Image (cartoon, rainbow, N blue to C red; front, side, top):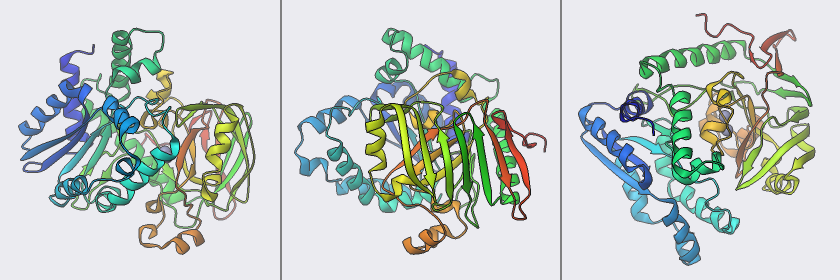
Length: 414
Ligand code: ZN
Ligand code: ZN
């Protein structure tokens, strides 16, 4: 097991760089019971840093599954009012929110997907006010992960539970830079690189990106007024925080009617507990018109059938191939990690915050500006050391953005 000192450093990093906890502020933590020891380290550190109150929402995979297996549908498909009130109470008090997500990716594989969808929809509907606080950065929030037994064994199926846990701890501390002497400083430097990348891209304001790699020849039009985001965010009252740890991407939205060509996946996609691997999609006017998969073609079809928006793109993200997640060589079956492995695009919903004025637009206006909408948002990896990306400027000139899977621009220099 990663030593106690390393876990202490990780707890501190989550509070300082993750949510950037302030003196006198409350903290709400969502944490797995299996990670109680680590969570208590976070709580201890939070009080040391001057937190006025720390509240934990404990979650447990086994208990979640027992509820799905035994509770009547009307209970599962109903999100309780008291939970909404609890979240609103802390959000309105300006609390920081830290989520430790370590669910077994296969947990719900034998549960009827429509029941899971109903529960998710009910939660999404009920938590609309709380989500406004997080999605619009009214409060500071962060998502991190720690190893849990089932998840670790999914990643390392040939190892004992204990060894798998240890291997996953080793991988995570490297990826979140906790193995470095001063992780908080390392993140400061890392955030600066991401900030430089998004500033360059925002200034360039490319009309189009062209992706070329084996099996890939794809043109992605970017809507007028698109905004590149990534790395740290700033809350309404000026506190810098990191919504995701790890994070390696800068991302924006494709024009929902402006994607043409074919793209090949470079890593397997875990969708609802099933793997889709070695697949490609062909787009015309933004819509998937053809697809194939060496593995999981039926699952891919199911995903594309979700709704009209699921056949269009909602995100394009640039991640250098040498990212620490990619270097680990692992597949985590967890988006927080896997989406930071390489360049990716997502089928489904786009973030309106990636467009100037997008958060204030209604559905019709968003559609007119090319912002995709869907019930789903599924990232899949298209990056490799063979990927080249060109940016096409307003005046039609073309320049190199990525060469051989990494930045062709000076994102570290400034
Ligand atoms: Zn992404
Ligand atoms: Zn995404």
